[in-house]
Length: 288
Ligand SMILES: NC(=O)c1ccc[n+]([C@@H]2O[C@H](COP(=O)([O-])OP(=O)(O)OC[C@H]3O[C@@H](n4cnc5c(N)ncnc54)[C@H](OP(=O)(O)O)[C@@H]3O)[C@@H](O)[C@H]2O)c1
Image (tube, rainbow, N blue to C red; front, side):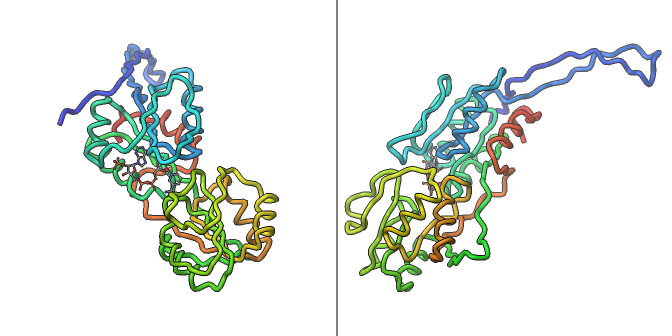
């Protein structure tokens, strides 16, 4: 495999050695290896924020943001940023994309519940020796008044709902993972999602189409007016969708909380601001 040199500025500094005044000044070659081409794996508020922040830099890398293409409406991307949509075709496809595009660094800002992409990013970046950081917002933690049943995945959540005895359940796990709840017969299901679920999935459920952020007053009113007895949520973390958790706590409504999938062992930061600092601090020519 070709080992390529990333965009590298060679900066010449004259540096006087004050400890040895008679020694002549020397030219010290310092190399600043800020990444020149950065791929952001997007689909989150952190990805959108990082994109805005990078674009605002005076000297900025070329930026490509990649979306999986799951939602019909995407957050607007600033001018001058390349956008690509759709899967890469597994680890090999991503590796080829990174190599062909001569990317120096990757920011994996996919969702905490994106189970595969973070591992693909790790493998492809390892293969090419590219710098990689994951932006992973901290998970929520149960507060003293929370009544959480923590489960491993959405199928386990559906099983929990089926045996809960609740009559009206609010499902906020996204539209892609509703199928297991078909087993929850005799329970009124209220589904909230950004895009409409496929018509053959949970055909009897009521669907609310809406995108966060949500506020506590509106979430409390929703839970109260629909007489919701159980909330199902992924542990997405962050503030945009936390209001439902606060509302459930205030109303004493139990929550089935789906635990996050495993994350690869890569450098991880919690915020877009930290990812920006990481990008700025890259001094290994895009290599880790
Ligand atoms: N899962 C959630 O709850 C959730 C919530 C909000 C947003 N999202 C966003 O929706 C996207 C898909 O989620 P998922 O749960 O299907 O993730 P996933 O299981 O990790 O990804 C499945 C496949 O989708 C493609 N993919 C994922 N993210 C991509 C990106 N940013 N750009 C291009 N291709 C991408 C990849 O296809 P190839 O193997 O062909 O490359 C990947 O193998 C993610 O970007 C994530 O940030 C997910």
